[in-house]
Length: 88
Image 1 (spheres, rainbow, N blue to C red):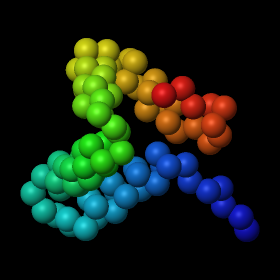
Image 2 (image 1 turned 90 degrees about the vertical axis):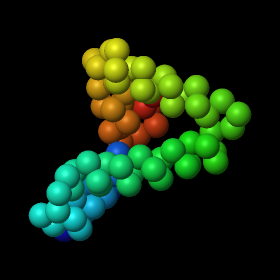
Image 3 (image 1 turned 90 degrees about the horizontal axis):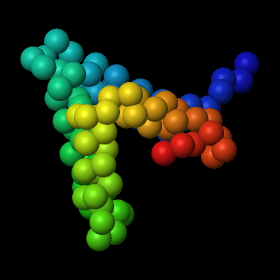
Image 4 (image 1 turned 135 degrees about the vertical axis):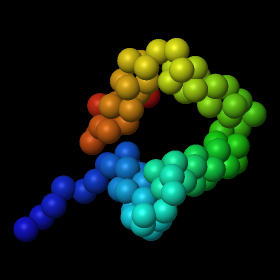
């Protein structure tokens, strides 16, 4: 029996679920798990994003705050299984 390999977005979502489980019944476990992922992501943005890393970060935050439909499209496009399906 062969299972489909998970996309990178699915792997991140699974990691988030695993972090929540790690915190058990702890207070604000979902927020704590999300914060861990965000901290790692911010460091990686800075390390690998070049001199304009904060501009891309600002674009994502702006979309999340002001255009949730666009942000949802970005998320969905990152669930793609092939490079041809990627939009963001």
